[in-house]
Length: 431
Ligand code: NAD
Image 1 (tube, protein in one colour):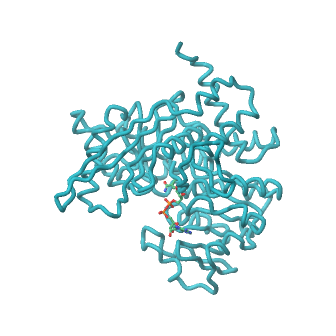
Image 2 (spheres, rainbow, N blue to C red):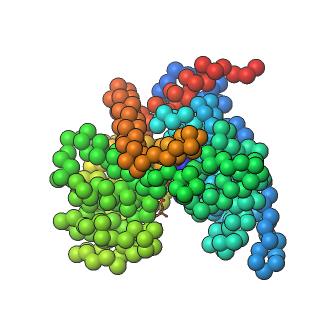
């Protein structure tokens, strides 16, 4: 699971109230919060607050100018009680051990809420990939793969793309791993280009799952989708795919990228707006009756708002001004803890990231199944099965939401933690 939260203090007691929580603090707090609703062995909760293993490696490469640069890489493996570790690799200057641990924990909850037989992991290299040429990135990826080779594998730990990495990075990783093993092993990584074992529909999957969950939430709150107005922040992989799929029924009135947003109360033709990948940061070049800032977009008087760009955009400072009836978390961690509490007080449902954008890891699971069976699925099958999995997860979370009278976020964490704890109890602790 990717996140844009970049604060890295894992000292849970020394948190500045005005500072956003680190990924690890958030993950631990949400774990404890869910545990408080459940009757589970406290020793299991204690165990889940810590990673199973963190591999820290040195990754030296020779730059094109002849200098040797040394980077630090990590692979944090949180929990594998339900299956192999699964999670992204990010190349970003602020990657730290703590961040990888926190994000790996999130992946454990995300896989469990989807009932996918994987655990959680996260890794990466503290590097700015924009400073590297394509050849240098390839060298870095191949060397990093070799350094973590002993802890990854198709039945042990399966990386995927995240911030700063892409399908090409995954193809190099798969090649480097396969060359050392002496055979082609596509199942060691997901998010590859389809020509080397990637799945059709993987790129659009997180946005597709956001659209599926948005439709379910609209229906649950007795709104008519044709009468529903939606604002989407971020027009990248998640935001553009969600907006375009929702545009086939609902009225998408505002979208944005890093430069700001466009607004048309009568509905935008989202299909004619270039996504981040088609033409980066081009939303504002599209003609529309009005423009809005990213802050204004979040406060538009719409039925549904979907923050799908970065983390920590819904905060204590703007939560009271949000006018939408429903919030769907397309990005990872867009709502701070303080904002979540305000939305709970205001009775505004917030459908959490670990459910809404879980289409990515779900289709990664399909990719892994295709790889180990050496048989590719059609796009139609991928999308059908994704829909089935998303609806099942929605149903499971809805049941907890209704029976326990908790927030949607708590309901999702309760579903996830119940499954993980039951698996731990059933397997037992190695003495
Ligand atoms: P992306 O790079 O494809 O697109 C990001 C979009 O957000 C772009 O339109 C960019 O202009 C915009 N943006 C960047 N900074 C912004 C800012 N400060 N304010 C408003 N807009 C801004 O990214 P993505 O893959 O769509 O990911 C978006 C979010 O979804 C991230 O939080 C990511 O972690 C999460 N996510 C992504 C995936 C995935 O597989 N792509 C899966 C799950 C969750």
